[in-house]
Length: 155
Image (cartoon, rainbow, N blue to C red):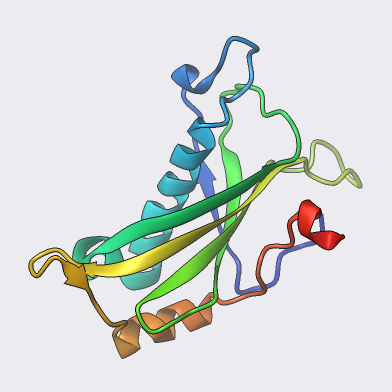
């Protein structure tokens, strides 16, 4: 895996003992929690703690995950690279790569999964979609990158 572009945000996300399945791997459903944890941490850093889309209102509309290698439980956190793609008027997509650090010099880190989440901006008071504020768009554009290239779409 090549070094991600500067626009990619990287966050450490700890694993939980309860994330494991009967095979000793992190369960596929738990990957959604890992992505959510990365999003929450990332949004606080991207937008500031006072005005995150999480506070203003955002709903998950879609997830797509491609599992590439089994992730076994360990104490050190995994790394999640995250960047914005497809920024629209009332929502945006986030792309992710879930990986670890290289175990030794010259060895690439293991890439466990690629994923993409579509988020819709929402006003909880009026219970209706909302438009993206110019400040939100500016922040997302600072972290913009190419869409995820899923293996099955390369045909």
